[in-house]
Length: 341
Image (tube, rainbow, N blue to C red; front, top):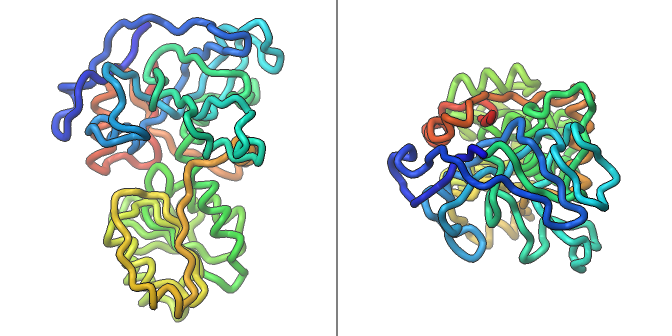
């Protein structure tokens, strides 16, 4: 089958290291395995981290490697024990393959299972024509849907949903919430906060086209910086969801929060260096959010099927995987880039 393979690490020209080539197609190995014919595979900033050789889990991924952990498509083949989907069914792939037996998973937290397999991270991913996954890790989709539009939910949407759900828990109708970064995750975060909370939602992004997108998707207003937003409102935000996570955005967010406010961190590009007195005296909560659970993915998928949340997709042919990654790095992708085999 055709796949986009990473052969070495680089922080410069991605086209030098990500090549389209023929590799062996996956096969059924266990009774509950499923082979998915990929319709769309989302392009994530984590893919950039992998390309750059950053540690993912225990270290840089072994090479060569097929990227792609946001996957959706059609069931191509099923193992002997699979009963919930049939060949030809459209499905969305939950990013983690787990047994269901780990104690933390028994509490519903599949995203915390240690040693799990994650296609695109520590197993062959979906930047290819076919992917092997498992029955317990697929979400059946309506027969009339286009799986391409659902692929970004597997990580971008799921991470946004978990973070915004936790922020929404502290929001009242009189409150304001900021979303920092209106990209592949943030454009979904704006909509999720509008669905899950009664608060006024403010989008923060330095890009004018991203701010315009946020308004089209339901943000009450938008600004280029946190400082501009604070200056425009009499009150400070009760919650901020930071999809950038840089040193600058974290510092701006913490200094902007209302007393008792909550900062949800999803972006991982910076460090936190905060005076403990500020956290204590203002009773702030700074929390992280790691992808999400299978149950959260089900709930999010239902909202998209009901057309309450729209996924903005920039489609690229698989042959242009390097260009999609380069565009993501440059900040020129609005919404989520998705590769089509």
